[in-house]
Each structure stands twice: as C-alpha cells, then as structure tokens.
Length: 91
Image (cartoon, rainbow, N blue to C red; front, side, top):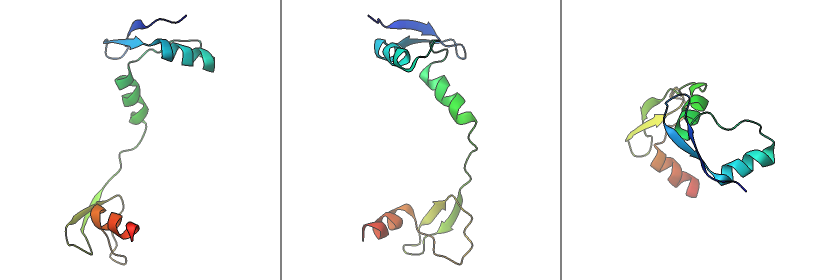
C-alpha cells in the first residue's frame, strides 16, 4: 500500500526518503502531514531547545586522573572519574 517517497528538507534542502514503514507509522498515529525535515535537521531542531550542560573538572579521589562532572565540586564529597565510578557501582 505504501511506497518509499523522496522528499526535500525545508531547512537544508537535501533530499531524504520517507519510507513505507514511516508512512504506515504516521497513518497509525493519525498524523495528517508528512515530515518537512530530514532526520538530521529534526534532531538539530529538537536539541536546540535544550540548554548545553556545563562540565567541571576535578581530580579523581581514587586514581588522581582528571574527572569531568556536570556539577561544581565543592570539596565536601569525593569526586570519581567515570572508570572509578563504574568500578565502585559494580562492587
């Protein structure tokens, strides 16, 4: 019933394929309009509203390597690098 269709992205102007499976999904959900943007432009638009997360660096309390964390270290609690944190969760 559905066939792949080639559409043009309204943001970047590149062609993209609106697959038969995607068309079936749109029909199941009751969507009236076909997509206007390619996957890359949809993802870029979706993530544009999200604020960029700020990362801070601190020395790992166990191994001493530099750790990047999404919070400002205050010094009252130890900071672990990703490897030491994963190892501590497995114990």
